[in-house]
Image (cartoon, rainbow, N blue to C red):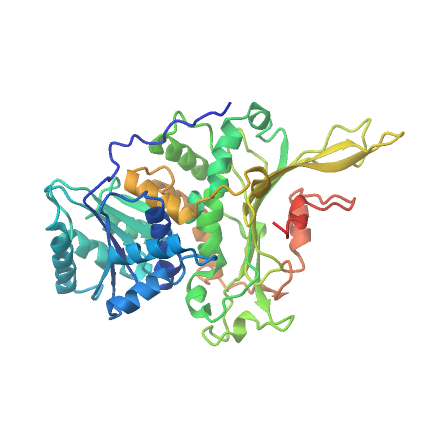
Length: 509
């Protein structure tokens, strides 16, 4: 028997027809690699509104053929399936393109004329427009202003705007951005994407926590010693260092993606699955976290090793840059459930593997009949190869009693076979079409998140004294040499007995 979670939002706000999706920044990498493949995934499953039309907009001048080639270049069709090919041609047929500037009124007038020409074929007056900003934050404000002034559907239709991160660079810039956008777009119309909230295993945390008494009973400071949330990439900036140098690893990963995972992991049970009830609980947790301290932070920057160039070898990076490409920092939650439990957030580029995971290490068992046995650990593998596994102790088979660590393994590809796990962007775009804000970031949530990291970011940028110099680490390593000492300081303990997690045997999957 299976259980169904109540819908997080009513479907009365769902857009079912007469809808145009406008992708601004259509010529960029984000749109090409993420937005359009996600739209195609929804289109091929018949999950987009009836007779939907997709309009790309960017500064680049392109003919239709070039535009269609660009938007379909990252659509997966490994077996060259004829049905997929046919769907791709249908997807091209509903997709058109307009070129124009992001700061010129007349350009948005031309875009609106294109939208009205499409809408002239509607059978009813109602028309809906969804604007997806796959754009850098430097143009968010003029684009949102021009869209409201020139492209807003005001004849009984619904308007929605989807905004990509980063949402500012610190607390003040975040407030300014939120305030400027709110001058033209209501909170109900605004959907701020953090795509980690659309990932299957992040969404699964709610079910693991609140649908299992066995889990929720030990989900607190009395049972948990420490929590690590880890993001690792095996490649460096690879020519994009100039862009990365403006933000750094904390803004790029910790302040948004990993902090969102932490808030879902630690929030109290919401009153319901409605968007506001969920986001209320997330905000409460974030407000209970004091700003990150220097003493709780280690910064790193990768150097050339294993035949790979260092960060400073990237021609687009300033030669004297002290931008961190690795950061590990410890957060504390000052509330009754989590007081005293360290939450260790780690993220880095040019490391030894690709993975994103949550590792919850429980406290030692009471001393007495057992000595020096492994701690229980619960690992939620967000990517790659989604999995949940619990390390526990059991008696080794034989005539003598000896405890050995084993694992209870829920690897999705094994348990659920060939089931389709949707891409995060598919899930979030569909949520936006339904009017479901549950997995989008609210304004006050953003402000609370920035307050945690702004002081440490200002320290890194030299606004509070000399800039700290990040520790060097080899390309392809686990990070700076002091990493193990740092996490052990907060109670993390590696098992002395050799132990291989299930994932190490999953290369064939």
